[in-house]
Image (cartoon, one colour):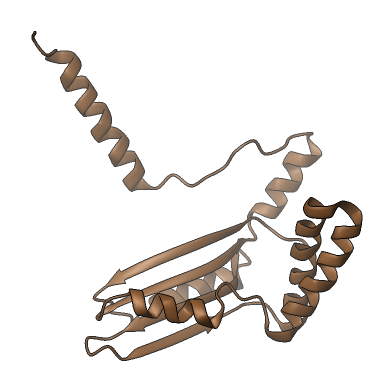
Length: 177
């Protein structure tokens, strides 16, 4: 199994008005092999405080076990070398085959439910970027390696613009002593 970069998304929704559009988009992206949900949970609390929970994984039980073995092996390799990789792979496969990859344990889910206000929702999604696998492989084949990565959102660009505007205003109108 080849694993693409995995991103942890934590989303909040005020006054959610879900109509299935988010799940439909995840389905479309999965069908196109662009992304897949390794594990995800969405918690919604209605105006009266009634709670609904949706869990989702796009991995079959076999894929979850294989994914768990790879992740466990990599963590074990970092912790204790080759011997740790073997122990981690076995532990990761066993844990995943028992119930899938879990972003949150049940106790943590209840913490999330307690923290969100009525008439809101929260989602935590472990999302694998499948589209990046061939790009990563091409970069490696060319002798390249990652130095840093991250997502830059449109809101981040607005914030940069606001900071630049404030700095430009100070430069244009220096404070007088």
